[in-house]
Length: 133
Image (tube, rainbow, N blue to C red):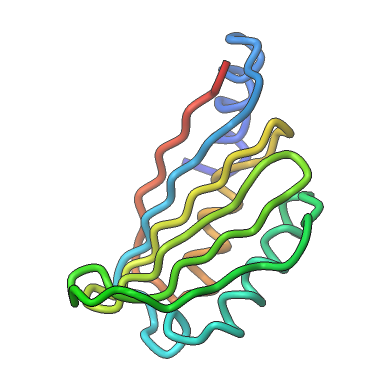
């Protein structure tokens, strides 16, 4: 599905339910390990993503490396935005990025997913979105 047609469908649903906000969960698979294990690259991603989808960052991006269990260890990130929050976890064992974007300002979740896939050099992604009321 083309991004513009997909965006039109999301916008239609957003308006139909009179949504208060939009949440998207984006799982990006088989990413470049050198990128997802680099805190500075993750911060760069957040800055560029906010610019792309028109979100104003509130405060600094926090990136923390943790996890004793190899299945879940890796960086986690949070970035407050004036309209809510962007967060993510970067799983070392599977080289998967789990990205969440929630905002009461509309954004195109397909643009965000495509950008994240390209930035992290992922092979594919799953996108799920919910219009929040």
